[in-house]
Every structure is written in structure tokens, then in C-alpha cells.
Length: 396
Ligand code: SAH
Image (cartoon, rainbow, N blue to C red; front, side, top):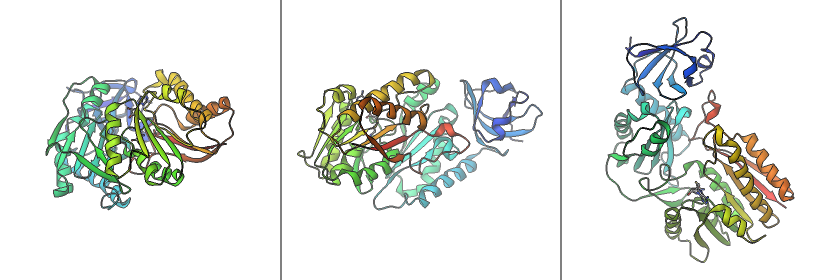
């Protein structure tokens, strides 16, 4: 016996758990035994008191997130084994010991059996981001495990949970270094250099999920005039410039991001003649830009829909920006268009881009359907975890 509180499900509400779905909604619960609070580890039982799974408690409509379907003690050894398994995947992908790339996602939520946890590796720095109290409470243990696993290769662990925890749970905490101290971090991705600032930057500091899509962009960029809309610190821009683009513009509403984008260009030896960074709102820029000027456009907006209530408005937003880009891109131009909203699935996204194309009245070919890379794995029992969707279009 491990002594965890018991969550007992209502009769007939155990089907999803038996199919290994990692969430339990509050409406499925008959009772929770003993004293408990948010973040506690609990064992989940059917109405007939058959053990089903183990997870941690949350306070919202999702009441439990599950991480294991076999009863056992959830101690440091348990998490160590889970971290090692995650590491092995990245090792097999060639990410842990590569001369060209030293940044990758080590832990990706449900996809790695850690609901509510992200760990990103930026060279000698690891950034932990908890989206739940259950995972946040374990941060010191996770930091220890990381140090043991990486040894001298790891110089710092930063906990960047303040924003994600406040949004998801209302809990107020401070970001902090759990080990080591702040230092400017320069990472390599496919041989390109990037400055990453987890303290001031967005999310954990860099958008690692676009690595393969940026690489794909390289093959289209030669000789083109590129607009990297929602460009953040210039990820796609550097690949484009290095692949021989004639001109690259990075546009983002964040002045701090554009400042780093410009520094990233210098780091990679790209001249001001080729690249410029512009602080602007996407809609304004797209509406006022000249027709047929750019012939390679990237649209990688932030998640327009954070939940189901905002989905309709989000779809209109995606349609509007895609319509502008498709209408204005030069004939033969290439559009890389993305959505990272979890509640907008691939079919919906494709429909919205199709509607935008119809309104623009242009002939459009789909060249690639894009997703997230394998260091952002999807748990097959948790399709809700699919988030990054992209299309590469040729517009005639
Ligand atoms: N493509 C980037 C990641 C983009 S994240 C990469 O590969 O690294 C989304 C970006 O959109 C953020 O940098 C954010 O600052 C920017 N953004 C959000 N709202 C915007 C708006 N209305 N206009 C322009 N940029 C915006």
C-alpha cells in the first residue's frame, strides 16, 4: 500500500481510463477518500474498487491527470526511470549528442507521461515549466534528476512556471534558478546560432517545435523575398537568409523579440542589407504591404484560441491573415502557414485556409502538411495533445 488518497469513479465512468486516456473529469468522480489537496498523488479506482491508474489532483473541471496505469510507489526512482526513457528517445533521434543541434524538448507533457510538465534543454541550461501544481511541487526533485542524468554537461536549471501556473491554476509563484545562475545562452539548431533568454523570453525562451519546419523552409528560400510574420527572435529568418534568400523581413509585435532577432542575425553573419527586423502588428502590416512583393511568407501566429469559447473568433483570425497573405503573395509564391491552437484541429485549420484561398481567388497547391517534431511526441490515447499544424502552399 502506498497510502495515497483514493479517487473512486462513478459507475460506468471508467471507460476512458481503461482506454488509457490520461484525464479524469470531475463529473466522473463519486468520491475522494481522506484528506487531500490540489497536487496530491492519488490512486483511481472503479466503482467496483478495481485499481485503474495513478495521477495527481487538480482543482478545475479536469480533476485528475494520470501518469501511470500500474499501482506503485511514486518516488524519485519512478520519475528517474521516466526521465531516462524520455532521454533515450531524444538520444535515438540524434539530439543529445549532435554537433549541429544542442537544443531540444526533453519532456513534452502527456506525450512523455508527464501531464502538465515541459522540460526544454538549451545546451548547458534546462528550463522546467510546470502547468499544474502536481508537477510544480516536484520541481526540486526533477532538477536533481536532471543534474544526475546530465552530470557536468548541465550548468543551470531554471524554473519558469510563474506564468503557466497562474494561467492554469491561479497559483502565484516566482520564476527562479533551481541550480546554477543566469548566463546568456547561445544554442545551435541545425548549425545556426540563436540567443535564448528564458528569463525574459516567451514560453521557455525559444520555439523548439519549429525546428524541422525551419529546415524545410531552407529548401524553398533561395533567391526569394521572405516575410517572416510573427517571427519572434528570427528562427525562420535565419534559415532563409542562410539558404540564400534575397531579402528577409522579420515582423513581430514584441520589440524585445525583434531586438534579439537582430542580434541573432549578427551572430550568424547575416548583413543588414539582407535582413531587417520590424516591430508591427500583423494585421496592420499585412493590410498595408504591397501586392506581389514577397514570394515566401511565413505565418506562425500565437495560439489564437486558448479554449473552446474563443474558437470561432480564432478561426476568423486565421482566415483573415491567411487571406491577406494568399491575396498578396507574388505568383508562384510559397506560404508556410501554421496554427498552434490545441482546440483548432487539422481539418478545421485546413478548412479555414481553404476559405481564405477561395476569397482570395487564387489557385493554390498543397505541398506539405506539417506538424511537430518527434521530441514533441503525442500520446496516442490523448489526441488533445496534437497542437502544431502547418501547410506549405504554392500560390499561382
Ligand atoms: N515563428 C516563431 C515563433 C512565433 S510565436 C519562431 O519560429 O520562433 C508567435 C509570435 O507572435 C510571438 O513572438 C509574438 O510576440 C508574436 N505576436 C503576437 N501577436 C502579434 C501580433 N498581433 N502581430 C505581430 N506579432 C504578434
